[in-house]
Image 1 (spheres, rainbow, N blue to C red):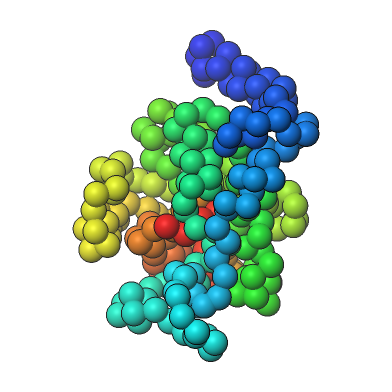
Image 2 (image 1 turned 180 degrees about the vertical axis):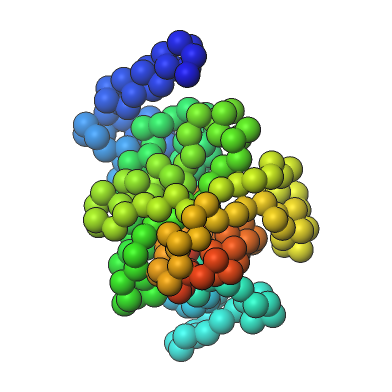
Length: 243
């Protein structure tokens, strides 16, 4: 590690410890360690029923029974469910973006708080699992960002619930950005981009894949596919937000 990189990390860590008592969204005064004021907290959009049991996509209407949305019904996926507690809008989306791209590492803790809500969802809590598996970054992207947001989120949630983090996946191919791609193009872009590091480590284990945002599900589907092909007993997905 270069001296410059080490210095940046030290200053970021100090910034986290000395984070000033104001709202990270509107900059109004808050108490120490409170990242979101009451007004901004009220704008955070929780995902509430009715929503798709497979991907958590919310729907309007008076649906009272469990259902699967048309997008999930039209394709075979390798994960049992993808659970998010919040929509990727407004403050939630801004926090994720600022954490990933703008060096605001102090936002890790509120994002982990939001991610932890998924553990109370019956789709996760009703059956035990063996490990959290963070979605990996390619080494080029990791070098640019200096951290993997999924791994850092998984580590904090792991510390809370006592389930270990298993770095079971490796990203072997640097793919182009997926922002402007549709679902089919994203799947093609990601085909063969991941491999399992140690097959023995995932074989017959129940795993929970961790990422920051579920948009089309292409990334977590490709990760789930290679994990299941390596012998995993099951894969479920948790993310901070649902796009």
